[in-house]
Every structure is written in C-alpha cells, then in structure tokens.
Length: 436
Ligand code: UGA
Image (tube, rainbow, N blue to C red; front, side, top):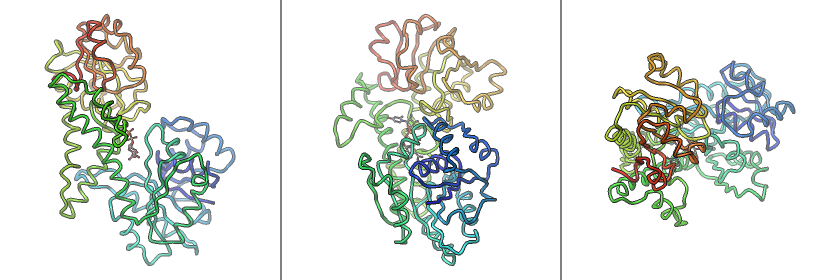
C-alpha cells in the first residue's frame, strides 16, 4: 500500500521506516527543508540502533521517500499517518497547532477519493472526535493509533510492539488499517495484541500507559524515603516487589526520577483535560510531585554532605543511550548546584551540543568544565554525582575514583554502584535509598 506520513521527527521517521519494512511505499513529509534534505541522504541525529542502515537500504530501494509537506504529489496516496509534535503549553495543556495545520492541509488535498487520517501523535481525549466533527463536510475519517515507542529503541519497539490500538468510528477504514498492519499481525513470532476500540478509549490508553509507568517510578521513589530512614536497601526492595508477577520488575529502578519529553508532558496534559471537565486526579497529580521531590532530596543530600563546592557529574542525558536533554534530571541538579556557586566538572559519553549552548556563560567563566575522560573529570573535585546510569558508569574502578577525588564522596542518583562495596573501598557513599 502507499502511505503518506506527516512529520519527520522521531515518531514520524520510525513510523515511516517500520511501514516501509512491512512492505509499504512511504512518502514522509515535513515542513523542515533541512531535515528532509538530510534524511533523503540517510543522515539523522537520532540515537536509534540500526536506523542509518535501514534508512540507506529503503531509500536505495526507493520504497521510502522524503518530501516537503507543502509540495508533494497529491495522488501518491489517500492514507495519511500524522506524527507531529504536541508539546505542552505554559498552562499545562497540549499545543495542537502543528496537528491542526497538518489536518487542514490534508483535507484540502485535491483528490476525489476518501481520505483516511491516522493520528499517531499523542493527543488529548476527544481530539479525534473533535476533528471528525470539525471536518464532517469533507470526505475524511480519523483513526486514533497511538504509539508506545521508547527513545533509543524505537525502531525495535515499532517492529515488535506489545499492542496495536485502533480507535475508530468507521468500519471500512479499520479494515484498511488491519491490512496495513497485516505483516505484523501475521507474524506468529510476534505476540502483538490488536485492540480495536473507540477513539476516546484509544486516546486515554496512551496517557494511561505513561501514567502507569511514571507511577511505578514515583512509587518506588517514595518508598526509598523509608529505606533511607530505616537503613533498608531500596534496590533489594525493588527486586523483591518486582518478583511478584502481578507487579513485574520493569520501571522499579529508584533514583533521581523520570525525565524525557513524554511522562511529564503527558501527565500534565491528562490532569489538565480532567480539570477542564471538573475531574480531580489526586493520585496522578502526585506522581509529578514525588518526581520533583527526588530532585530536591538529591541536591539537599549533596549540599548537606559535600565538604567543598566542587563536584563532578557523570551522565547528563535524560536516560542512557540517548543525548536527549529534555527534562533531564541532571540539568535540574546542575541548576540547583550552580545557584549555590558550585564549580562543576561534567562527563557524558554523548554530550549534546545543546548543553554547550545552554551553559555557554558558565563554560566561559570555567564554572562548568567538560571532560572527555570520566576519571580525569574527577580531578580536584570533592565528590562525584551520578545522574544517568550509562553502562560505562556501572563497572567502574572504585579505587581510581578514590584516587582522583580530593574527598571521596559519591552521590549515586541512579543506584548504579553497590553501597556495601563502595563503602568497603573507603568511599563515602550516598544514595536516595540508603541515606537521609
Ligand atoms: C516513554 C515510554 O516508555 C514509551 O512507552 C512511550 O511511548 C514514550 O514515553 C512516549 O510517550 O513517547 P521514553 O520517554 O523514551 O519512553 O523513556 P523511558 O525509557 O520510558 O524512560 C523515561 C524516564 O524514566 C527516564 O528518565 C528513565 O531514566 C526513567 N526511569 C525509567 C526511571 O527512573 N526508573 C525506571 O525504572 C525506568
């Protein structure tokens, strides 16, 4: 089948590639000329395994094309996947400007055929219904088909999803979508579940999934306050609780809390939509409060214990295997320490150029210094704060850390190291689950 994908950002690109891999012909369009030009040459800054090879392969086969959303062949297809950003506005609600403008241009594409618009973007409840009402005079139908992709492993997630959710009010359109996903559904090795439902349920399911994942993190983080008080071990508690198959071990890593572009944005949008309809969501609102508290707990742990205002930070990105800084916990810790006039030595295996721009003033004044070698970064610092659990921080040489630091303080924001081993090696080890 031929499909147009609107949006060449992470979700649009991965959606385009997965549709192509399943045998469809895809034209991925975007307003950003530079982005399109680079993608047409298989160039991308996304940290995704196998992305470049797959892009090269399908571009060469001409199964995947990139173009401008303002100027593409109207006859290419009448199936449009929409995967544009829906960021949070300052009032906590979702900004649907890009989505609205896409839909407007799609409905105006001159073709006699009925158009099927598949919404991949995360949109507030009722968006699909509102679009159907708004464009009922046009020969167009809308299907909600949320994505559940994780940054860094998005292509693998797209090709091997746990579920496909299709929210619709149009039977022929749903048959078309089932045909598009047929290669995936037919593959017996995949355990993908297909849920055909109404648009509101599909939209809510996306938010509910992120709410559950974030809630697991905030729950274990809240429990870490108790292990810290009573000398328990939060990592063991996680393992014990996660061994219950009804709970499961995923998303029980306690530490600095969640960052990234999704959880905070989606929780805020969900709570705001509910509030607009006079529905209070106290539990869901508390997820974000607990997440914020972890940051305050960690910066207080450092401020209370470190002998001098000079610290090394390992790990800046919001999670390992990405250089994405959006809502990264490390940045919030850095800002809190800068306010207290700390000098900071920074190491991250894939430090984003955005960091250099953001902190240019501090870099000029040498209040922040960047290091390529993680051990060199420790020199003359009183302590080390681990903010992102990159694999290279897991098996570290503790004696080397001790030698390079001026005072041997470790603040482990991700429970990366073992408390007992670090203490035995003569380091002053602090984490949110083991010390007040
Ligand atoms: C998340 C969801 O996992 C995806 O299913 C969803 O599609 C995506 O949001 C989205 O809505 O687009 P992502 O933001 O890429 O994906 O990152 P995650 O791997 O879920 O991690 C989010 C944050 O939680 C990271 O900062 C991570 O360090 C933190 N985390 C994760 C913990 O603090 N503890 C854990 O046990 C797991």
